[in-house]
Length: 184
Ligand SMILES: Nc1ncnc2c1ncn2[C@@H]1O[C@H](COP(=O)(O)OP(=O)(O)OP(=O)(O)O)[C@@H](O)[C@H]1O
Ligand SMILES: O=C(O)C1=C[C@@H](O)[C@@H](O)[C@H](O)C1
Ligand SMILES: [Mg+2]
Image 1: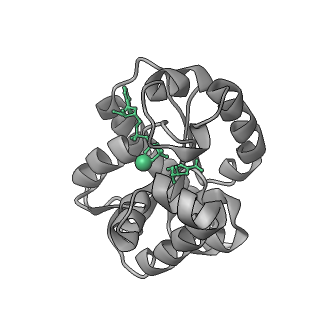
Image 2 (image 1 turned 45 degrees about the vertical axis):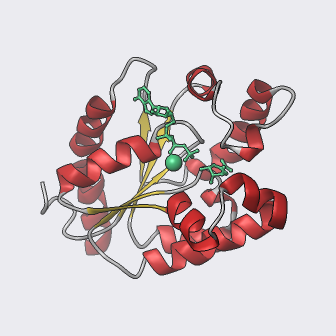
């Protein structure tokens, strides 16, 4: 599989909890690519948790760190990059994302809500009504996520391995479109 993308980076975007980190790690193995998670890089660089970054520097401070990390990461090749759920919010980030192939992982709010019920590491979900917060975030972000090259809809039952197989099977169709575009 290592030749499938010819070294072009693959960016996973989508709502928090959809599985970008989980799927991205496996996908990188299948592609023979390195794996990077922008949230992890931010936490290491800042020396504190995402919750603490939001508390100390606000969402604006976090988004700046996120853009800085993305700008650095996109200088490399042969990477699968799991992004944070809000990476799509800043327009400048799109110029970095478009260096690679962008895959939107999409699933229902119910699935995300069930997965993150006990999880306190997503500051934007520390809300009196996290399910409604998820719905409004998705409504706001859907037009942005839909700018991805590939839209992969996943069901609650699909395993990470099955999702990886679905993505790998869909990649050639997108590459063909891009090749055709280059010829025109
Ligand atoms: N296909 C799956 N089936 C069952 N559980 C899953 C699946 N994918 C991810 N999970 C679980 O859902 C939770 C969230 O997954 P993950 O951290 O990969 O999401 P994410 O998209 O990276 O979220 P964030 O944007 O917050 O980083 C984790 O507990 C993970 O184990
Ligand atoms: O959806 C979001 O805005 C976020 C998702 C996570 O990946 C983290 O980047 C952070 O919790 C913010
Ligand atoms: Mg993640």
